[in-house]
Length: 176
Ligand SMILES: C[S@@+](CC[C@H](N)C(=O)[O-])C[C@H]1O[C@@H](n2cnc3c(N)ncnc32)[C@H](O)[C@@H]1O
Image (cartoon, rainbow, N blue to C red; front, side, top):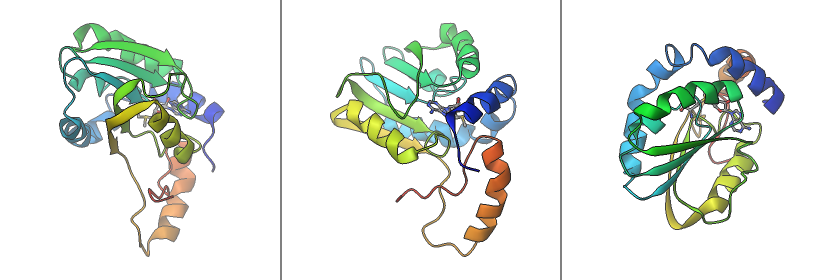
């Protein structure tokens, strides 16, 4: 199934109440490493693309100023409840990550965790994100991508019938 915004809104409405207790637990180590690699600093403007329930927001340092963007009001509602416990200052915006409503070059660092494989068009999302990144800005991406050469592709394609229904595409190739 091809990913679509209306389906994602529906699926993430269902995930929102249980996301932290289920999916998020699987990815704690990966996202922690991703944020460590980005090494965000106080004073930086950071964009969390597809912020979800705000798991990455909680890892940002004091003094950082982050915008968390997501399509799903339900996921944002969960994230909103975490803001008082975050060290960074966080602002949440509901928008489509494929057409971001920000000025060009306004952001110092981008976090694209578990979003490129979820939006209908990952390439459009990446282009939209890079447009708002300042020259010399930093990007971290943590996601599931199909290995470059893999004899298991047909198997991934088969299982993708189910994972895409659950709101993620496991056949996304990073190079594409
Ligand atoms: C797998 S969750 C990942 C959330 C978060 N980045 C994380 O690492 O936990 C995918 C998120 O992408 C959001 N999403 C799906 N399509 C989107 C779109 N077109 N624009 C912005 N966010 C979108 C969903 O609402 C969901 O919160």
